[in-house]
Amino acid sequence: MNFDITPLDKSLENTIQHKINLKTKPLGSLGTLEKIALQIGLIQNTISPILQKPTILVFAGDHGIAEKGEVNPYPQIVTKQMVYNFLNSGAAINSLCTQNKINLEIIDAGVNHDFKNIKGLIDAKVAYGTKNYQSEPAMSIDQCNTAIDKGANIILETYQNRCNVVGFGEMGIGNSSAAALLMAHFTKIPITECVGAGTGVQGEAIKIKQTILESVFKKHFPNTGIEALATFGGFEIAMITGAILKAAELKMTIIIDGFIVTAALLAANAINKNVLDYCVFAHSSEEQGHQKMLAFLEKKPLLSLGMRLGEGTGAAVAYPILESAVAFLNNMASFEEAEVSTTE
Image (tube, rainbow, N blue to C red; front, side, top):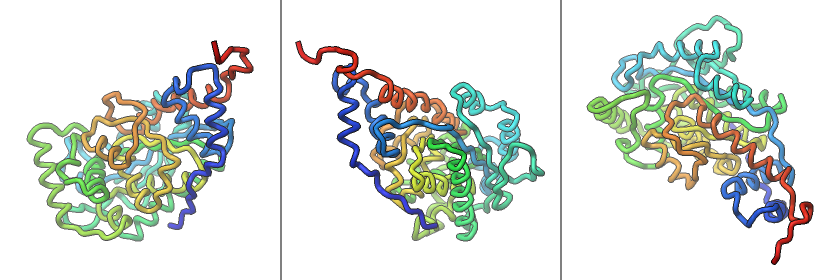
């Protein structure tokens, strides 16, 4: 639980910015690419950063509230079915990772199913799904700490495999409800403004979802970030929280996906605010609460494509932008090298 996350060392900031400014282009003309290049350079503390073994970790877990089907149009069994789909390379995240040469790992954080040591799945199961927070906290504090530690350990193994840029995805029927509750806790935005469509709730069903979650929010009174994560979260969200914190401690570049992953980041930010220095925000999810999350964190996303799938798909689509930022910083000629005049 003790993560030693230091603020970015900005001793090279002027040097990196000078290198950016001397490229054969008008000042600032590469826009956000220049900001990303500077950030990654500062994260790696070098004027010539490199991105190594990009990886997306998809954590899957089930939620007790999903068993009743009141807040989700898909049955809970879809979580395990989608895990098999990931393992069979049939999901959107598989296609996007293959396209962009990103390593993909699937983790069972707490799915309500016994996968029997199936090949390709990392077994980090804490329990067979969380409890229903309509009647009791989703997990115990010990379970929450276990999930955080497991997420941190998985990141450590990823880092030791020479990865320095990582994104996160998730799968768990009902996890948009957990994310909305966490959002309301950490941002103090009314819960009804945090609840969105999730896997496709529409019309009157959204009002029912809002009413149920408003009742849940009024029932529990967590005092700390860990208590909130244990009360409202899922095992996959808690593991992502731990993974984000450890990745920041290890000075990795972290690509933040959409609504669910940003909810995990809100919890991580409550534990250690320095974590934000290491985060790049992939996209603005179409899930209604996500834009408000980003506003709360005072961060701008790279993309706005109307996506709200999850799985880490936004992070996978955004990764080539990071590649472009590093490429121009390392490979583009300066005015002097290209013998291009800077004055008339």
